[in-house]
Amino acid sequence: MSTPIAFATRQPDWPSLVAERGALVRFARRRLLDPSLAEDLVHDVFEAVMTGRAHFDGRASLRTWLTAILKNKIVDLVRTRQGHESLDSGSDADGDMPHAPELECPWPRPDELAAQRERLHHALARIRALPATLREAFEQRVLADEDSADVCRTLGISENNLFVRLHRARAQLMAA
Image 1 (spheres, helix red, strand yellow):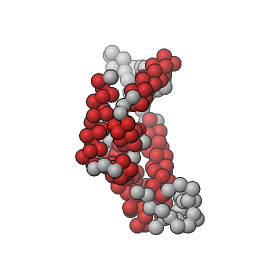
Image 2 (cartoon, helix red, strand yellow):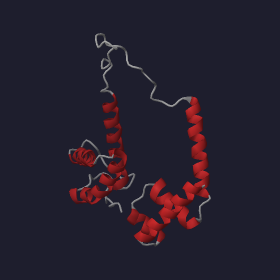
Image 3 (cartoon, rainbow, N blue to C red):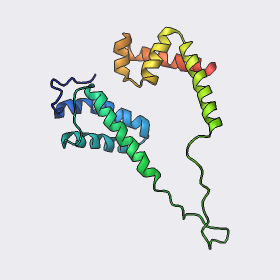
């Protein structure tokens, strides 16, 4: 659970930040699939906060604010990594003259967008059709990306029961 800050203009103290570290690392690992890179970005978030480059104004919970900073750092990382592909890496069959690599637009084509929207529409309809107990667990844990402990507290269930509900929800969604 996010630690409340008493004054809107006060920067969070170190113990408040450390209390949120686990949730931030889990969030980053899910998106980056690289544990050490996730740790580095969480460290960068803490450094930005402690050096005053990021200012907490109290309009959101501390966890929400820190997660927003982390999301921006992930986006920055992805953008900088995309810019490092060389256009001179290819060569012709003889190996003498470099040729232009095939450049493809990174964005989906209109037909691909339409297909994605259709799949999303069907997936959301299948989620809405789940029994309420399975749907609530699935929406909170998977769609809202809430922490398992928070979902268990909200639903009043054990962690094992949450995993059973998620398994059943996924099984029903895959069968449909």
